[in-house]
Length: 151
Image 1 (cartoon, one colour):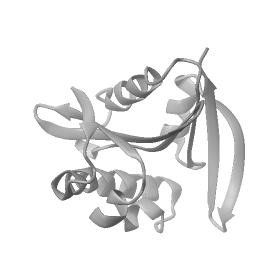
Image 2 (cartoon, rainbow, N blue to C red):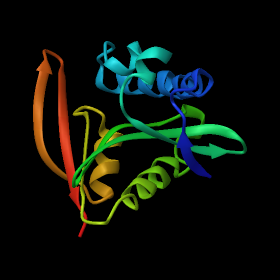
Image 3 (tube, rainbow, N blue to C red):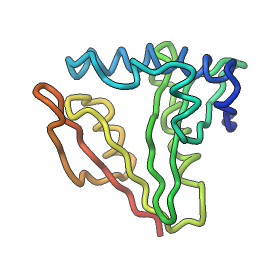
Image 4 (cartoon, one colour):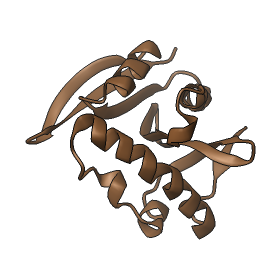
């Protein structure tokens, strides 16, 4: 079941962090860069981020989370994370499908991930996203951006 998460509630923000930290630790290992911003988040920074969060629950447990910001005809996916014990169960795909059904249907979706995160890069390409750029953020860290137009 996918439902919106009230990130302003500290209890729910803590649940999101309980998924986010282990999920992004896996990404940090994949890209060999351990100072990624999601690993520094706190309940307060999540509550102030301005993103809308949706969670996928598996047997009553939060198994994955997606967060977005919507501006006019753009859906910006800020986070897509799955708790490691729930990897390869289709949760990321379900969350992405949920967000793709969001809005009026003509928005463009955008997302970025670590360029060395091969599973995420493959996931977005398989999901119909097109690579639109790659940027070196600092030595040892590059980010690949993708978009998908809905019409």
